[in-house]
Length: 413
Image 1: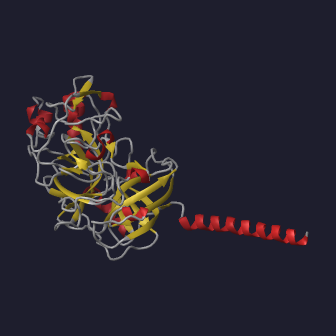
Image 2 (image 1 turned 60 degrees about the vertical axis):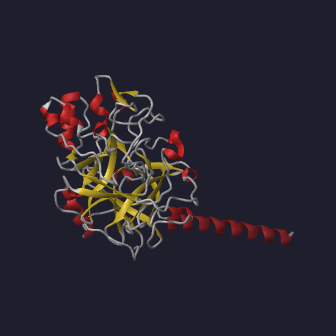
């Protein structure tokens, strides 16, 4: 999250500094960016190091709610190599974790070999202290998962899944789902992804200043301002850029990452368009005191309204799409909407000020969540660590038998 500083999200800071020069990015590189993270243990910066314990964005610190039922999902798969993929999830029962579908059903992940869910954050997976996040410490095995019918990775429509733990985790919060219309509501965003500053984004080239992936849980605020479908329909009509999500028109709800300046207010910039399809969507709001945006690793994390889960973090996109000139979009310059560019992949999207995020609107799919909770939905199993232990145990027994046979042969000789 990114903020003035934050988590796998890039949190908001009330003040921003702009990059020195603009970056022109071909529009054919544009796509919604799923916010999961692929990392190795070595990517955890100072896993036992110090952290600013006065930060208002750390869950359970300085009067901030601990959100003890929100934690980290680690996914090891055929495509994770020596590392693992990381997402955030929240408990809706002692054995069920609500998260994003792209965290568990995604061609870029491939077949899942193992899943773990850890609270109060992801650090206990590596034997590191979860401090300063508070709450019971537990690491559970995600033995199965199910995704929303109609989930579409190509458009990130219907990006909702539930992971089923092999054993219950007790002593932590479980959350209900928000059943009203979230549009216009202030929301509290929770994630265990990348932390950083909105002025520089999560670009790894900027080092510690750009993104800190320490698996700690961070919290911040934003406002649900627009539904994705009417917004992207207007974008497609005006610019010819088609990123319209599949699913119901209220299936994805969006918020932008404000710096405090009108120049970086993505949805406020719509007021400047003559095209009524865009102009009529204009929402002017330049930031909240603890505003944050989402970043890699926050995928699947909850967005709360009135203490209930209203949204699930899905993707990020650059406000630079509003600068499209037929060939390029522009970011990273002193007059650009998006203040930073990701130099690693040639994209404007790097969780900086002037970007916006999409969250799956849980109320649009509440009947499916209810059916999962009622035990009416089947789950897909993933390989069980116990099965692996049996295999290894069998191999160990075979080795012992061979050694015993060798010893007997030696004595006989």
